[in-house]
Image (cartoon, rainbow, N blue to C red; front, side, top):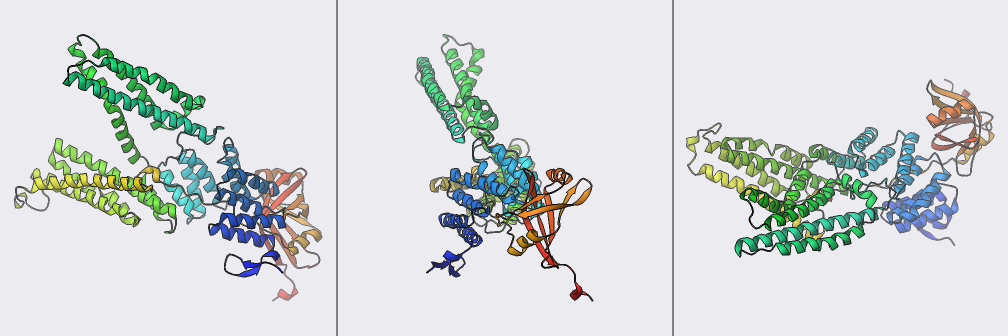
Length: 594
């Protein structure tokens, strides 16, 4: 008695009597439902029933990938390509795995390019090429690839979300690492961690030492330079210990170039050491010339304030990198159910808010320092932010409306305060306003501007405490939907019979002069591929454009014809044609006469 179960859609059936394709359908259903372990079992049953079919091995690879087993996913993906050289989904599946294997990044790009050559009418290959460029930080090339995919399918969510990341100039999770390097990313990650910790500890130790030495000199009239030199001596074993942890020194210069903020942190730490040493030497002089007092104070400032200044510059640079308004337009066009789109929408709005806040601060500072009427310009500063917020309709983050409202209130109040203080108020006479109005308008504006900072910090602390996504760029999420799960095209018994008994096979291909046809001899393999023997001219043209169509007519059923459209690749002395589409029909006969 056979085992009875459901097919994933609530329909019962005899599981032991299913075909390989039915098991593949079941595996795909389980993958969609988020059950990769169960999907792996179904895909393995399909592979056992039909070991020469490539679709089961693609699903096995995808199930292993979902389970985080890239080492197990790779052999199955490679076997799928071996079974069907012209299968574009198999090429995409293999490219998706190879991009995470150290030293095989270029192979991933080659397979993705071949998939695009095999199926230019599909968005998947262009999306994969865009993902590969995005992960390397090549945002311009990634943007072109995603726009090409959207020209094919404007509703593709992965292309939309990742195009928004390219427009934002998103930093990949490992900005210091080039995926094309043959080194394990974990090794470069350890090197980055060692450099970061060394720079952080060095700057903190020197800043505290500088403050302590200056306090002893100014408050207690004590010289503590000896302690400072002891701190410098302590830095030597600290530096040696972290240097041993790097391990990949040949890659360090390239790492610092790929991640400029890591490079800035290391250079800042080295500069702090030099400034601290010179500061100690100047302080140890019996009588420091008055002309060197600014130099002495400046060196102390470099040591103590260099770290906060670098952090402030980093924050502003993060806010002003990319084009958030265009990114909002792309993310907002994605359907509401996409998790990464919802998350990136909120983060992008926070980036836009920080950018608006920084402009607002500059306008207010100019108005306070130069001319109060300049604050009137603040009223137009929040317009892009408000426009983007209203179009995005983000309801997942309750902190955003509060922060946005405070920035708008600040702009309106500061503009009113500047207009009243300068005696210029458009549309109504300034004498109508009470004397205290300008002062209170400025107070409300500056308070709202400060309150928006409080809201941002509270939102960030809440995200840090809960371990959730915060209002910063590192919370942006790349959309990485599974690729290579599309069903393969099968040849049924009628099609196989047609090619087995056909008296003439016609191969259609294209070259520089246009469409061409040639006679051929064909056979059907057990895996469902066609093997052709054709003239040399066809081989030369197919190397440039492998897309072909093969026609055959069944002599047993005289009106029955078959057209197989697919991808042809040379394999020894034959052409292997992987089907992409099968068309069948009947020739006109007497029964169709009018």
